[in-house]
Length: 447
Image (cartoon, rainbow, N blue to C red; front, side, top):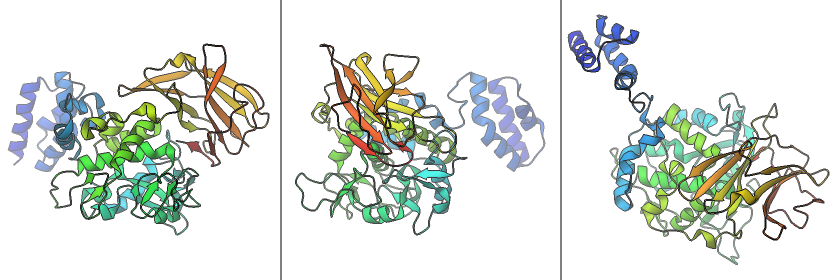
């Protein structure tokens, strides 16, 4: 058995050239057991081949870590062909036990994005509250919420513990959601409850069948469900049911929804930095696969052939909005940021952020999106740009952020105003005539 392992190593080295790495020399010339040989090849094989051929893709620890190559085989596909190819890319992945999920989401959904292991708190998905990791599983604490409900086909196997589908949620709010499918209340509905639960975020809503999460995470949830429909949308090796998205949700048919609503949420709430970091960590630390809809939100319309008329859903002609706001880290005041989404055809040089002090009602800083020293710009598919500014934000007792645009006539148009930790009474331009579009009274961030 040892000879076979040595032959494999020598054969590999003859193709790749001289064994310049110490671990390769040790692997070849050590007369160890088959177990050592297999472990060494498993740990160092990808790195060995990558270094020998000079291929940076092969030098990654896991294929999912190289996003630029991970989806190459799916290029120029759409419809069922795209779905099958994405399934072949993401479905082979490591699966955790249900117990291990507890510890994983304490890292993935930590309140401090940049230091998740050290953070003592997590962010609940439906309340957006920052709560202690120590309250996990307690009656008044938080538990594991399956975004795609278990009753819609999650019976066993990897689909039941998939981290892309599980988030921390307040126990009471999770109970209120139950297994309702996602959707907003119909106009003039008599049975709509806002917020969906007294512990839920202010802009949640629900009725007997539908559940609408906070607007700041609707896109996150939509993309999680799209992932589930692709990863588990075909025959499962363990016999688990195939999952599908539909505008006619059915537990019997394992069809979750509402599909048209999820497609719209995917457009209105593009992936934020927090969501992208979470996707990276699921890949690197746990499952070693990715959610393709976080990396490529445009896949949604290529798959389901429903191109949402985005301009019909936005009041602003500039199609720009505040997508994420992180204003109050626990401990030292650091890593705070504001994230703006701008439609790619808009003139972002006209846009500015006015930061308001709630005590004085006046602007304490103005940031221009044209200032490249302040804003870092990233692309989201072909339709949107994300502008991120890492700046210190005042933390209280009440403050605000206004997104404004310079008009041709010299006036300023207020596109959006958000106040946090209380209501802001504005007394200085540019937002003097504006009521808050959103008011967040929590203690951490708006996402």
